[in-house]
Image 1 (cartoon, rainbow, N blue to C red):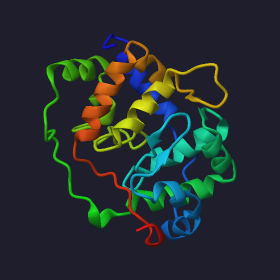
Image 2 (image 1 turned 90 degrees about the horizontal axis):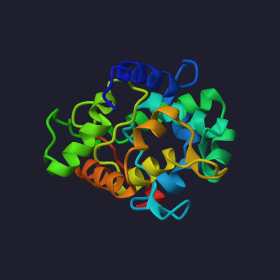
Image 3 (image 1 turned 60 degrees about the vertical axis):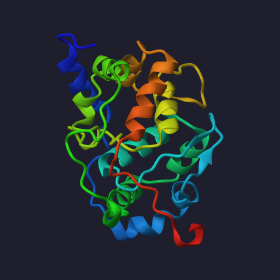
Image 4 (image 1 turned 90 degrees about the vertical axis):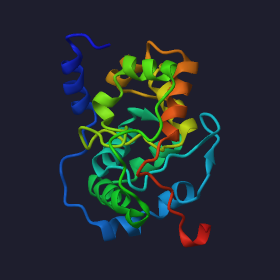
Length: 219
């Protein structure tokens, strides 16, 4: 995976994780549009039952460019999930930009800066898996400082969600499950499900900048 072609993979990945054309971002407008999001992403510990039982991702504190590009991928059908597809289809590019801007700063007062050095080192087995996948090459120091804002922060994200997302990149031929991303599909292909789970468990154990910020009605 660390062949001479790897720089090309990075360049292609940057193109894959591209948000809609740059638009003015209105945080206040995003806050008003977030009502459709808080029923899942605003409840601490909330779990989805499809395609498997796993916590929904923490999106408060995630990068705006990544959030917008993810919503665009659901709208285009590149990410396959019936509920998220239905929501994303109802959004304009401006809506996505506003929501992304809102969630990037949401809960900022709760976030402590993350050091470049991981708080806990992985086991030798997991370290070898992370090196094989070259995960830090895109997701940055401590897996919380992506080299491009179009890449997600991983540190501290729910481990079961991370494992499910990684498996989704390897899923093909199902109209309701999977993520059509050629770069990530190639990245996860060499790994066994248990290895993806082990990496996800370590990444989820790290301190990060992601949060589930409960809305007043869900506190």
